[in-house]
Every structure is written in C-alpha cells, then in structure tokens.
Image 1 (cartoon, rainbow, N blue to C red):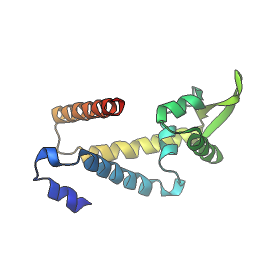
Image 2: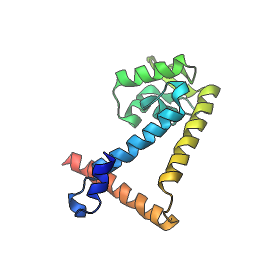
Image 3: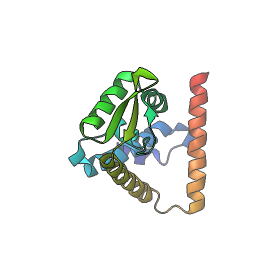
Length: 155
C-alpha cells in the first residue's frame, strides 16, 4: 500500500486517489492506537463513543447513534462492551423507560484522557514539518473535501 501511494506522488494530481491517502492515514493512526491500547481490548466505535461522553453530562443513546452514524445494534454492542469494562454508566431514561442515558465513569474518563493523548501525539507526528499556516490551510482543504463529499451524496 505504501509503495502504491509513493508511486502516485509524481502523477497528475487529479488522477490521484484522495480516498486512498485519507484511508491510509486513518489506518496508520488506528494501528498506532491499537498498539498503544492493546491491554484495553477496545477499538473503533467504542473509542469514538468515549470521546463523545462526559462524566458530568448524561447523553441519550439515540443522540450517540445520530452523532456516530451507526445503527442501534452497533451502538448497543459498543455501549455494552464499555459498560462491562466499567468505562461508562447506562441509566434508564426517566422520561422514556425504553431508552438509556449514558455517561463516563472515572475509569472511562481516565481512558478517554489516555486515548486523547495518543491521538494528539500521532497528529503531532504526522504534522511535523508543517508550519502553523500550512496546518490551517490543510484543515481548510480537508473541511472543504468533507463538505463536497456530503454534497455529492445528496445529489
């Protein structure tokens, strides 16, 4: 994969695959996170859920489903996994007994802080050599790509 990406570097910019590059960056980040968190046996959606939660605020499970764009079954499995490991607390919603409210536990807050540090360190490494202005410009381009991708889905 890396060789294919390097070979693409000299090609006409419009013939290169943006998706392939972004996917590769995400994959390397996931590999790094997996290696750093191997003792916790958590990856993917559960980690992203942790970053959406707070110890002080209850969040509806339905809101998490909307925020992360996953179906109810995936969210339920992820939350159950986090709950079994005592990273979150699920409380029955007093306004809707079929629904749950979720918040971080102390243990979950600690893990959230650890994963945030790992992700920030990875970002620092992949942004090394970029000036602050280049980083701002890069994120502007990425935001615009995301907006364009969303618009393309709506067409």
